[in-house]
Image (cartoon, rainbow, N blue to C red; front, side, top):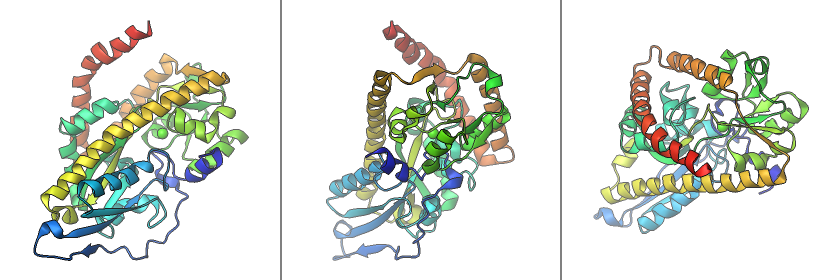
Length: 376
Ligand code: CA
């Protein structure tokens, strides 16, 4: 995939993209009813199901779009063809940001995207994708699989007739591309940076102007100076966008998106009507996608980071301590505002925060210490 194709596909803003999706090929009035082919209704094992899955990612979008196709393939194999899911990329059946409603209403059986996009409908939603200074991908996965996270996620989605499933994670993202070096908080003031979502709210509080530029427009806006900086995903997707050609400073860490958990959603009554073995197949495929995506992001980000460094034109930087300290304080304020007056998000936030507090010392002692050790 070349840069142009990638940018065309990137009309969807990866993560926190919510407000500005350009892919709104609105043909959602086409036939979307469930088709159940039941050659023999007497045994549940012979009943065949044909589902539609709509996604918030462009068709075949690197890793994020590919995961829906893989999921459908695996489910088909696991169920010996009894559950056949046809995948529609963003805009093919419904626009990217209408996935939640399409599945919630039962118009289609399944969706794929990130919970972050539904913040306007559900204040607790961002906690199941990423929050500034929150948990990394491994901690998130632990909270979701072994902690209270998944039960809370199901509880939060239940009023919408949705069941969530883990859909993979980007891992910690990068802090973004800057045309000028950031040496102090003064350099943040007045900075025009593309950063949607909660991270953008933090930047705004720090005196910057946070923009929600659509994916397809970021490169041109950065090149022309309409924006001074942008975040996107990580070295792989960022390289495909070509940011390294026009913004020399590449910052870490992605304090605003320490994980990028994605989701599959299934219309709850439809899911509950399935035989138990098909339900299990969906869960199994979701777990495999979760593992696959983290592996794929880590492999390709490592490869493209090496490529960027080898080309020698990009200057890798870490944000100054005073900047990160200030972002951390402001992030807490932003999160307090999110949960204010919303019982569900308060409940989720308390569980999330408690899990993070519990696991941080363990990570410092092990992963953190080990990474420092092997760096030498
Ligand atoms: Ca991002």
